[in-house]
Amino acid sequence: MFEGLSAKKILVIILLLAAFLRLYRINYPNAYVFDEVYHAFTAKEYLLGHKEAWEWWNTPPPGVAYEWTHPPLAKEVMAASMFLVRSTDAWAYRFPGILLGIFSVYMIYLLGKLLFKEESAGLIAAFIFSLDGLNFVQSRTGMNDIYFVTFMLVSLFFFLKKRYFYSALFLGLTLASKWAGIYLVGLYLLLIFNQIFKEFRAKNLNLKNYLGKLYLLFIPPIVYFISYIPLFLQGDGLDIFWGLQKQMWWYHTGLKATHDYASPWWSWPLNLYPVWYFVEYHKNNTISNIFTSGNPALFWVGSGAILVSIWDFWKTKSHGLFISLLGFFVFWLPWAVSPRIMFLYHFSPSVPFLSLILGYQIHMATGRKNDKLLLGIILGLIVLGFIFVYPLLTGIPLPKNILELFFKSNLTKNPFG
Image (cartoon, rainbow, N blue to C red; front, side, top):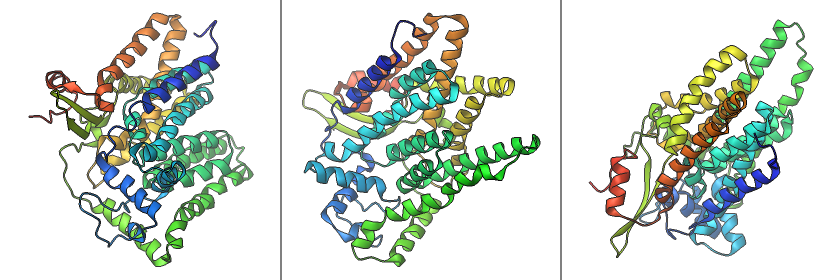
C-alpha cells in the first residue's frame, strides 16, 4: 500500500501533524476549561505546597475545588510542568498532556504493527487516532484522561512484548492517574486465562512461563503508593492516605448528580452527546466554543468496523483482532452498570482500540482489492469529519449562524437555545 514511500517518513508526518494540531492555540483560553477548575487548580495548589489540596474536608475558594476524587499523578505532573517552565499559565499545565497525546499516536502505530504484523495497519490506525477528536481534546485539557490512556497503551505494548516488569510499571502509572485503569487489569486477566486455557487443552501448560507476570501483582501497588509521597512530605500520614481511598470509592459509587451534557454509555460510539467545555462571546458577534467530541466519521465508520471485526474474528480467530476487540469492550461495557453520572470522555480508552480495528479493516480491504480509492474515501471522510468539528474542539471563533448549522446537524444539543 505504501510502495515507493518510506513508512518512517509517513510516521514522522503523522506525528508532526498530531503535534501541530494539538499545540495550536494551546493557551486558549488562558483560563480554566471544564474540569480544569478541579484538576489544574489542584495542580497549582500542589505547586504552592498547600496541604489543604490533599485533605477532602477543606473548603476551596469560590469557583474552584480541590480535586481528591482521583489519584494524584496527573496533577503532580502538571505541577512539575509549571515548576519547570516557571509559569502557571494554561499552556504550562496543558503541555504534558499534549506530549502524551502525541506519544499515544505513536503507541497506536506500534500496537497496530505488533497486533496485525503489518506496518501499514499501524500507520493507518495511527493516522485515524490522531484525528479522533475525543482524546485530541483531552490531551489539550488539564485533566487526567490522556495520562490514563497513554500509560495504558504503553503498559499493554510491554505486556504483549512479554516485558512484564515495564508493563507492571506503566500499569501502576495508569492506576495512579485514574482508577478506571483497573479495567486494564481485567484485560490482562482475560488474556492470561485465555492463554492458560489454550495450553491446558494442548496439554503443554507450564506454570514457569507465568512467573514474569507476577510483576503485575506487586509493582502497580508500589507505584500507586509512591504517587502519594508528596502527601506524606506535607505531614499527613497513612490515615489520611487511607481516608482518601475511601473518599474516592464513596464518591464514584455514590455520585447522583445530574448534568446537561451527561450521556448513557450506549450512546458513546455514536457520538450523540459531546460535552460543552467552554464558551466566549466576542465583540465582532463571533463565539468561541470548546466541546469534547469524537470525530463523527471515525466513530460511525469505526462502529461498523467493530461489527465486521466480530464476524471476522469468529471466522479467523485472529489474535490481533481478539485483543483489539477485548480492549474496546473491556473499557466500555463496565460503564453499563456504573451507578454514577457519565460523560462521553469516559469512552476515551476505548477509542484507541476502535482506531486499531478500523485501521486493520481498511488495511485488509485495500489489500484484498488493491484499491487505493477505498483507502482515500474512508480516510477522506475521517479528515472531513475532523475538519467539521475542529473549530469546536479548539475554540476557533465562528459566527452564530454558522454555529447553528453545527447544532442542527445533530453534532450536539444547541447551548444557545
